[in-house]
Image (cartoon, rainbow, N blue to C red; front, side, top):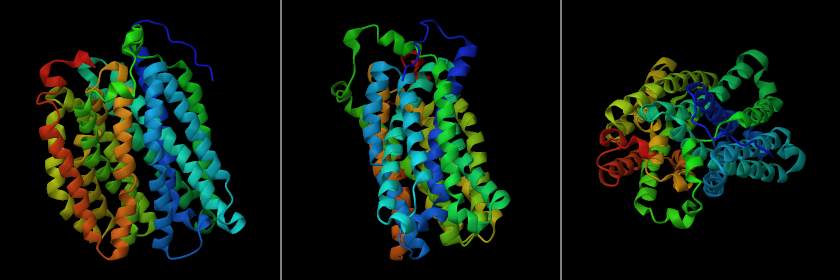
Length: 437
């Protein structure tokens, strides 16, 4: 695949905005394709596995969802190296092409009744490819958005990574709502309609691949690659153990909390609270829309007061409210009450989600920034984020659902300890070192 070179000039405001949109639009499609699996699993779980109870079928689909995360560290490693050596733009284009291939495979795969055990095997393979893609997307995207932004607005610009991430999940739910209420009957959706969103994702990925041909490479990357001695790699990354551990610690609580109140919440509202599938979808969609709109506000706030206060607020509030919030959600008597509680939970974690990309990027020098962000993040997400839903369902199946609430709280506590003891005492905003990124 040929990607034309970028001119070696300082970006104008218009070019910077176009590049931000190009970088984040791919992020949207990547996460749309990733979350479509979770959003539609209630409808296609029976198609790929032998029939059983709803919880058992969801447990199998959650297992494949978790296994797909195992490829994310490999994707973070490989695509991080590509991004640091050949450009953020090139790596982002490769990642969206791989996501397209995975979505198209799922859309066309025959079911268990037709090809037996080959059906879940193909599903697993497609999810591994998508995991590889998504592992590469995060680090390159976080690095690109942080480098392309004006220094004084870096938190605001970088917050759009989670805007588009959430927008991808939101788009998946909107497609689900349209199919549920407007286009298909429940029988049609369960029989074949669940294939439609995967096909849409493949087509959208191709459109983003074309759009990314016009992306401008970041000036910092162009400047860094002028010096052949500045090459990065895993060996160079290992010289920054504190920074690597910091990324892992921050990601641990943030990713478990995020996946709990987004991915798992749709199933929790059905399986525990007792809402219908349709009510659960409406609640999740509305909450995610509010959550996405809040991210730039939190990002802009971090440009004024610093990253550290927001991270501390996430850690402290998350440790205090997670258990009572989950209890209250489990006993919510109406969709409105459930919506209010989910929104409160998502706003609590916005101190992490809105700025996590720029915080991690600010820890590393340019030559290993994409790898430094992507690899430890992907490792942590694959172990803890990808398994959050499975752990929650396992606790429920075992009759100890409340233990999961404490598990989430413990993970958030680890992130709080990271902020207190591993991150620099003064972040880039308060210490005036914004230009170092």
